[in-house]
Length: 329
Ligand SMILES: NC(=O)c1ccc[n+]([C@@H]2O[C@H](COP(=O)([O-])OP(=O)(O)OC[C@H]3O[C@@H](n4cnc5c(N)ncnc54)[C@H](OP(=O)(O)O)[C@@H]3O)[C@@H](O)[C@H]2O)c1
Image (cartoon, rainbow, N blue to C red; front, side, top):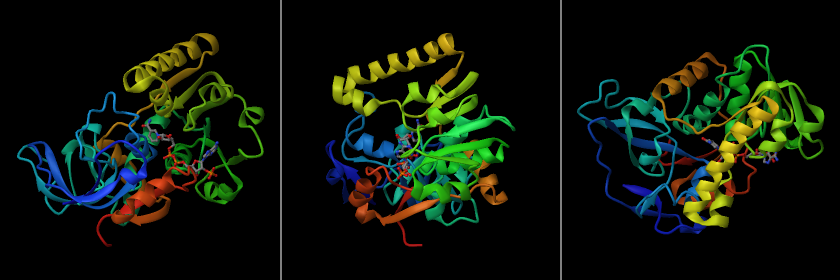
């Protein structure tokens, strides 16, 4: 199979498209022909080696944590999926490798692709959608939610999911993205280049923090409100303290956040890590088909332009998702 892999940690130029052996599914896995993958900021962090202390991957390391494609083969113990099924998934970190023509993923991490979407549209949903879903689980109708960076991959889906839950949705973005986030359902938009959200807001029920500035994000919460942060600061910690001590410092800081926020402010803070789940993907599919959730695709790059796709992701300016076309649609 053709796949984009790295043979050393480093910049985008480390990514090369190579011919590699086809992966073999285990009894509980399905083998998927990948039609489209998506870029997530975590891919760039992994490429740079931020996770090398605990995510031990041999080289060549095929990156990629999102795909949409067609099942080619199912393992002997699979019960739900069959060859020919159109599926999408964000695999467990032990099964990364969606920048490839073929990928092996546990059956219980694979959902049926929303039929109304193309593979390129569907590929942008799993990782960001599962993350947003997990962050917003405690949100109730009538509550006020602040989604930071509403124009990003996670934010564009989170706004819609929060709206569907009946929340009043406030988001931050720059002026060029105001119209986009309003079209997704945001009730209030704060232009972060002109205003500090912490000066404008208070008594918020839930903040989805995709920027990593916990201390700032916490200020706007009511007592008993929830901070759901998805940014740990691992790349900086790894750079500063190395691949082993770096993650430890992140763990200690996160524990401090959880405990300190609760004791000092009565805020329930948690660090959310996307969990692969076919059941939650099915929930997202239902919402796409009901018309309450739509993916926002910013740019599509062919697999051969994977370096340019990573460079674009690292600008931090993506509006919605960056998609990799593995197979022509
Ligand atoms: N824990 C997990 O499981 C998990 C899962 C997914 C993502 N993440 C992490 O969450 C973060 C966000 O991911 P993503 O995929 O949404 O990123 P992304 O798509 O790359 O985000 C880009 C967007 O962020 C906006 N932005 C940049 N700086 C901003 C600021 N100061 N205030 C408001 N908006 C700002 C940009 O808008 P402008 O161009 O207008 O600035 C752009 O639209 C990343 O660090 C990622 O690694 C974690």
